Length: 319
Image (cartoon, rainbow, N blue to C red; front, side, top):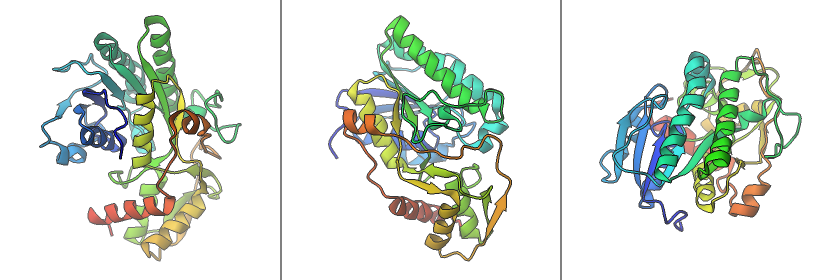
């Protein structure tokens, strides 16, 4: 693969021991960038970066981004990926989630500004809420319940976007906002509340797959390698964003559950459960901007990605 960001010498990745963050750390290291991974392990785990610990360019720092950040060497790239991101986590840690999106973003921005580094905010398709526009383009402002149970995550990210934009406009900080859509792959946790790991865990255990509502709600699944390549392409481009990074291929939750049963060779039945409050009916990115400006689009098909993810879960002892 061609080197996508030749000028990065040292990157700070907050939330670097989380699911997406750990893959991002590995990708940066593979291209010769030294990486400082900052994490408080509230939702991430050192196990996700265990294979990186021996790399001479990798440093793991246990710290809470809600406090001012200090690193041994000035970075030229700061990627703010710290945040509880799964329903199980942000519903368990509501204030922590809001503070990570506000105080954490402020502190990561301050580090980037002080060092003259490029700053990348990992935002989310959740800023679109239960969308009234489909598919969702970056021009869409969203349809979010500001006091619903999901708001602790939605509004944390929306505030983070506003703060990032204000820093760029008022202080000249070099910023980028990426909106990630339904990323999946190895290192997800089986009990994090998201559909792909939940269904895989249940199928491998021979348990009923719990589909919310009637299962007709859709999501667009992007394999983690594609997400990481999109983030790094956007960082290298110099664009400010926001830019959608996701896979525009939609699938209903019922079809996803049936597919995972088939791919795992399970005989698990489907069981319907109550649909969560404010659960989006549809979710699909318009990636025209990423295609046109970055020449980026997902390469891993859903079948390939699901097989890889199932194989990883099996390698961890599931099923």
